[in-house]
Structure formats: structure tokens, C-alpha cells
Length: 221
Image (cartoon, rainbow, N blue to C red; front, side):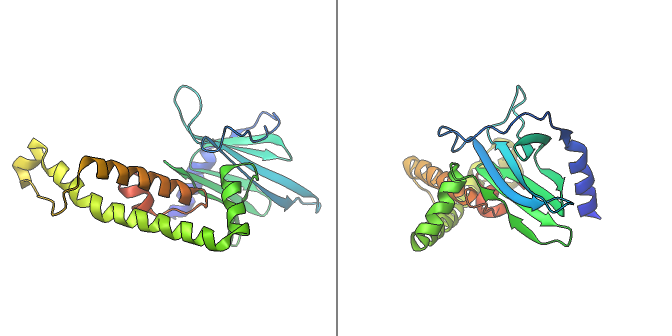
């Protein structure tokens, strides 16, 4: 029931496209745009290319993040994120965090999901190429990202709790909780930067965990 409600809401966000051609990926867009592709067959067995382009830094005066759907290079629909587009045989689901895409998957009518293929020129495409050419280095980089986020969580949460409980109205109600961990400012800044880089690396692989990639630094559910 909850999934049906989410799909109805997503369907209401979908707007028709204007037919403009898909712009190729530019070298200056590695962290501001995501571009993914996949091929599907239409009802007559013809192979079509479906593409999703997302401006990760937002669009227009309100700064909302939109996903744009292209069919054979022509703009066919758009939606604010999180987005779902109906396509032959299923739907494409797109969602983003503060670090990039956390989901861009084709989900068939029987529930099977697979990620779209990143454009070779995109940051996601370059990360995928590293994985193909140097799988061991890619795995080590992925492990390092997780370790950095775990360390940031363990060291950051106690200090964050102390900061929150030090706010006068909170302190008056529950008292100040003293963190057993106190780190210098320069170390905390470095930890935040490292965590941001680690979550960005994971987003390039469409990896996301609500606690590691969102709860502490991104503020997402």
C-alpha cells in the first residue's frame, strides 16, 4: 500500500518533455550532472535508447533537482526527485542524496532491478571504468570509503551530542552530556572533508546507506 502511494505521488510529479535534444556530457560537469543510459525494446521489437540526465546542483530560481528522461535523444518527460518514469516493461526510479545519485535503476514489472549504465564521459562512467580496468584498486577504494565513514560516525556522533546538549534550552531540560571523545578543530574539519569525499565516491557507484551517507552529515532520512 505504501509503495502504491509513493508511485501515485511520483506520477503526479512527472511533466511532459519538450522534445529538445539531449546535450552531450561536458568535461566541466563531473559533479554537477549525472547522465545514465539503457536500451529497451518497444512493442515492435525495435531497440531504443533511454537516457536520464540530472542536474545535481538544482535548476531555476528554486534550486529544485529535476530528472529529465530522453527517448532516442529526445526529451520526453521530467520530474522533481525522487522520480519514477514509466518505460517499456517497467519503470526507471531516480533518487539523489547531497553527494550525487543514490538510485537510478530500471525496475521491471516483476520487481527485478538493475542500474542504468553511466555515460562514459561522466564521473560515474569514469569510476565504472576504473572498476573494470583495476578491480582490486576499485575494491580497496570502496573499502576505504566505508572505513572513513564508520570512523567519522564513531568519532563524530558523541561530539555532536555534546554540542546539541550544550544549547541552553536543551541543557536546562536534560543537562549537558560530556563526550568521552574530544578532538581538535583541525581534525574534525579534516574528518568532515574525508567523509564528504567518501560519500561522493560511493555516490559515483550508486551506493547509499541512510546512516553512513546521510544521517550524520547529509541530514537525510
